[in-house]
Image: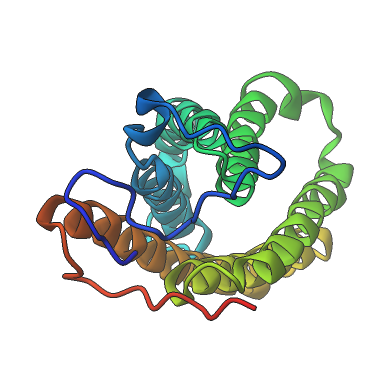
Length: 218
């Protein structure tokens, strides 16, 4: 997130260079704002609130408050960030934000429309499979993140652990693992918030205020 100008992207998710063309970028392409701080903030806030319930810090009766966040902020806002990352020619950011936006929308849709049709005896295994599958996706995105920044890579590393704990915990109905997943989820959200905070602040100030430590590239 090393900013070089006040208006440009902060460099956390670098754009991929176009090959096979000598055509210079258009003015509109050069002035697209960096959508990554928005996507990270949307992910962080929604994850933070849900993780408090998973960790049993807050009574389970309040869980419906997560649904509005999952629909509007974690879902729609992240998908918009992903679409803007496509516009920025950023495969990693586009894949990450669009996918996790869809994750939150699917979680909202599941709770609203489909959860009631699953027998209680099958719910744990169903949720476990769902979460473990997202853990697989997050793990290979973590591998790809090793060429972004330390902050972003740490988000994916912690998130992969979160999905593993929640997935296995639900599959085996082990409340201790679910609670542990909640605490790791809180840590994940805090790191994502930091990365978002750094992106906004570094871009606004036009210099590095909050470092994210870009990882070396081959």
